[in-house]
Every structure is written in structure tokens, then in C-alpha cells.
Image (cartoon, rainbow, N blue to C red; front, top):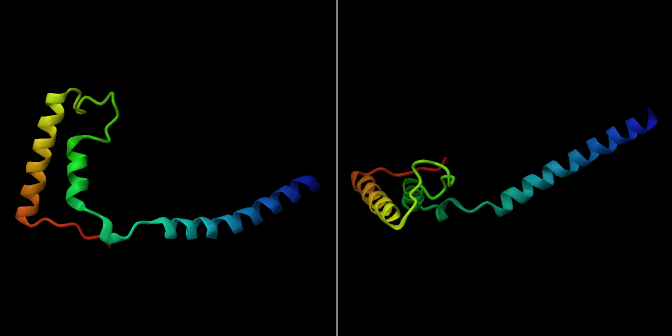
Length: 89
């Protein structure tokens, strides 16, 4: 019974200390908004780079990857030409 209370108190104390430290760490390592390149990130998503290997839309061979790059570039440039832009709030 006493050991349980001691563990609960230590756990609350560790949480109370760890949460602000984790927040400070996250704020100090977060990149600035100016470093975000929306066009580059859009191309990466359209190419399917981050899809898992088993996903059916992920390009598998050289030809599929090249077509995906061309399609991503055309789409990103078209969006930029039309005037789409990203605002980080």
C-alpha cells in the first residue's frame, strides 16, 4: 500500500517534470516556417515516396518512377502557375 503511493507520487512528479521539458525540446528542434517548401513537399507526395512498399499505387520500376516524377512536376508547376499557395497558421 505504501509502495503504491510512493510509486504514484514519483510517477506524477516525473510526468510534471517531463512534460515541460519535452515541450521545450520540441519547440527548439522544430524547423522554421520559412524553411518549408510547399512545392517540393507536394512533388514528394505526388511521386508516392512515402507510400509503403505493398501499396498498389507506389511506383515499382524505373519507368513507373520516371512517369510519377514527370506527373508530379507537371501537377506542382500547374498548381503554382494557377496561384495556389500554402499558408502556415
